[in-house]
Amino acid sequence: MHQAESTHNTVRRKFLAGIATIPLLAAGTRPVEAESGSDAVLLRHCSAYLAIANEIAALGYDGTDEQMDNLVGKQWVIMKNIEAHQANTLTGLKAKIQVIQDYLPDYIDDFQASREATEMKLVFGLMDDIERMI
Image (cartoon, rainbow, N blue to C red; front, side, top):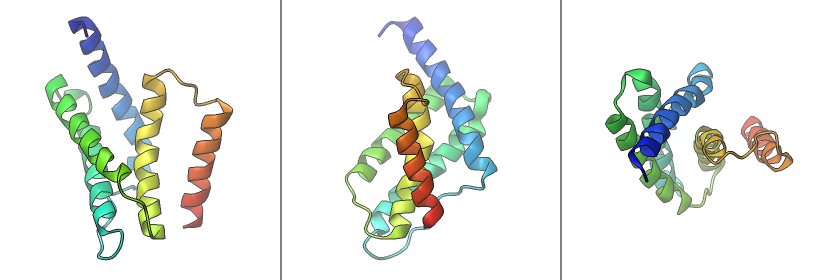
């Protein structure tokens, strides 16, 4: 990747990360509390992911590209761990939904998918429905 492209991507990620976390902060989203039981590991991973999302939001435009890349890299590792765990409780399911709601909008924007596409509306609608019910 060329340096200019790398810088553009980092700046774009920083901007999008800031915007994407505003609804989470406004809605009072906080990291899920880890509990014992079948979803304990999943909940710890989701909580760690959301804590980093809050760090990214707090950094805003004051953070360096290196800081942002470091935090986004940590999120990626945690997300791979979340992917490996199936939710076994409603609490685990809600925690996964919170992570997806945080990550998916930026993913769609970065890869120039349309949030207005029927498929994306279906995914977001399903997550909203499930979260509202649990």
